[in-house]
Length: 230
Image 1 (cartoon, rainbow, N blue to C red):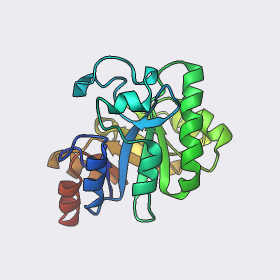
Image 2 (image 1 turned 135 degrees about the horizontal axis):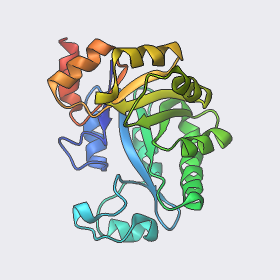
Image 3 (image 1 turned 120 degrees about the vertical axis):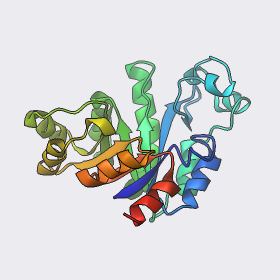
Image 4 (image 1 turned 90 degrees about the vertical axis):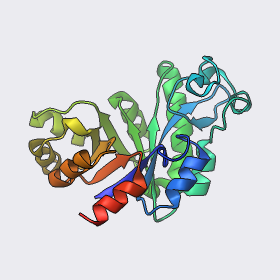
């Protein structure tokens, strides 16, 4: 089982910040997950929400502000900075696309992200809840590994077959969606298994028993210790 730090070590530091990513890198975690959005000037920034309201930065959408304007309100990292600082041979970066703003805006986000990520393709994965967005990635950047995010999973083999045929390498689902049968279906179609967000012992134990390969957690140091002593 590999441990992926959710938005960095977000239990300890503000999520999706350099502080959270540096803290995660101080642990032995196997990867760092983060969320990507596009600023109006074309900069890919790291932020989960569509606005900075949760951090007191107002309700103006990120996609309508420049990087300079955004950083007046909150210390958003850029994807370029993150790739340069934290992408190394010992740790993967899981880059989740947040494609809000229409088809044209989504294409811009995909192009800007993948142009930067292609150089680091052996150490990054591209995640999204939208199959259409992942299809855009696959069309022009076929060497990047794709992760399909899902809140629900089913038992129909046809879904798993279609997911594999779409070039997906890993299915990343809410932990309550995973069952033994669905893990078997993933393996039968050569799909990796990942889950979010595991922050308590009971959930972690259940994922271990199911044989989930990658666990995303806000508490990477805790999860690493639990797995080491399992």
